[in-house]
Image 1 (cartoon, helix red, strand yellow):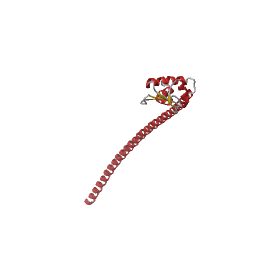
Image 2 (spheres, rainbow, N blue to C red):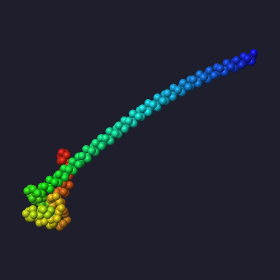
Image 3 (spheres, rainbow, N blue to C red):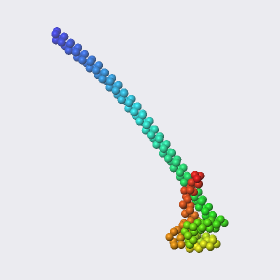
Image 4 (cartoon, rainbow, N blue to C red):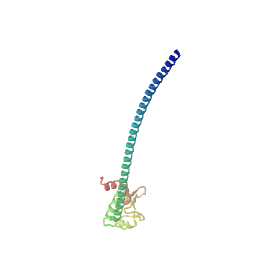
Length: 185
C-alpha cells in the first residue's frame, strides 16, 4: 500500500499543480484581456481625436481656400471694372479733342511745356491739332504724332523731352485715377 499511497499523493500533487497552473493561466488571461481592452480603447480614442483634428485642419484649409478664391474673384471683377473705366476715360479724352475747350487746354499745356523746356521748345503734334497750334502761334516741328490727344515737346537743343500726350498723362496718374474710380481719394 505504500506505493498506492505514494501514487495518490503524486496524483494529488499533480492535480493541485494543474489547478494552480489553471488559476495562473486564468489570471494572466484576464490581465491580457484587460490590457488588450485598454489598448483598444486608447487606440480608438486616439484615432477619434486624430480624425477630429484632421477634419478640423481640412475644414480650415477649405475655408481659407474658399476665402482666397472669393477675394480673387472680387479682385478680378474690380480689375475688369477699373479697366473698363480706364477705357471710358480714354474715350472721354478722345471726345475732349473734338470739343471747344480743347484749343484752350492745348494753350495751357504749351505754356507749361515752355516753362519747363524754355521758349524755343519744339512741338510734335497730331495731324489734327496742327491748325490749333498755328492759331496759338506755336511752331510745330512735326505733325506725325499718333495719340489720343496732347503733344510731345522737346527743348530747343533736343536734350530734354516732355511727353504731354493724353496716354502718358493718364499712365503717369493711373494710380490716382484708379483710386478716384474706387472712391478712395
